[in-house]
Length: 464
Image (cartoon, rainbow, N blue to C red; front, side, top):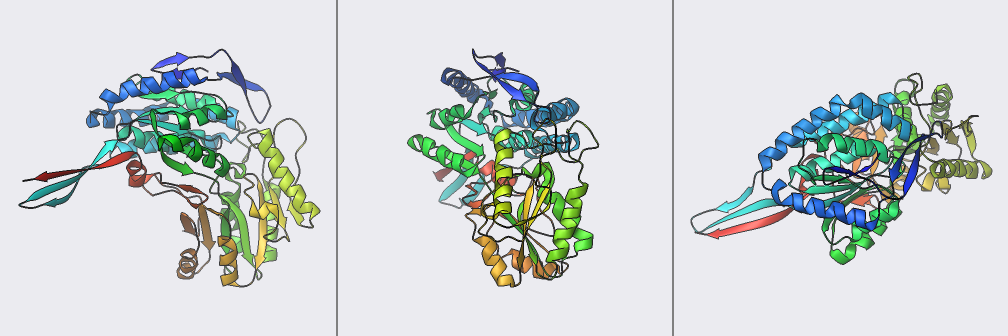
């Protein structure tokens, strides 16, 4: 797989291997981009911006066609995504369909000027102007879905884009961009591949006006520092350590499977998945038992096999992080109620793991594990558990689960998170705002807010 620059394939002298995390076989190689490659992509995007930014009707038609093309190539993209990322094909297809919907949603989004006043003396308009070249830096856990929710509003606004996928999952990203580039003018969309150094160079590049980044909080802080000299606009969707609170009336028998699914979807490699589970002391033992039962029955294996419901951890460093956190909890006296082991054979597999009888001081609780291991913590006082949930430096998502919806809504309103759900988790929609608070990020994505973060507001004031 090669890069995409100015509508054409581009390679580099050095290349790197992309592994299948289920088999550890090489899927393909990708170019290791240089600073010169990045600059060529940026200059191509700059040239394309001059005409792309002028015709809103053409942009909307192109976005509609992009959505159609992505769906037409879903089987191809899903297979490639599963091979390099590891997730089951069903999840891969769902991610791709979800991504395609952002193109159709933004194609139809109303973006007219806002009239602030229009009287006998003065007319004042707020208009929305494109920023210019946008740098999109995407992670390995949802490389295509996140790419689409960044690129679609950027293109609608009249911007052009240079995309840098994670080095673990560049293949499906570049392939998707090749597909949609077939209906876009050359240079409107570009892709450079390589390690984190290219992302840092993007944040420093003087001709990139905004970086839209999804990834870890530590790297997000580096992006902020690197972009400071050019006063870059930023959207940062960073780490999360989402708390789910099960109230004392939670129906363990009826709803536990939904909680489990929202903790272990994509092998727990989701920024906004359930990562800390607080259960009231009345139901704690049964919650641990039921979660362990579900984890013990899970079929873990190669995502290309439709019988498997969970694939591998995507890469070795992440696998080692999860196993280290679990082993630390075990050594400190926590109970491994399920999992906590690597199956024999090849691949970065790790059994879904339930850890009980621990407190908030454990690293597995206070840090983001980003993998298939969930701590379950006991509480007795509701005010206390809300305080415990809010004590985290992260604030991406949270949820409250109860048979009493009104009571759960009141608790949800007290949680410090960009999104707080009641009796659900991980539910994202194209037209609903998404973003974190505290160290989980700045800016917003999805819905009208995702578009507004891709434009400059300009006042036009006319004296009559």
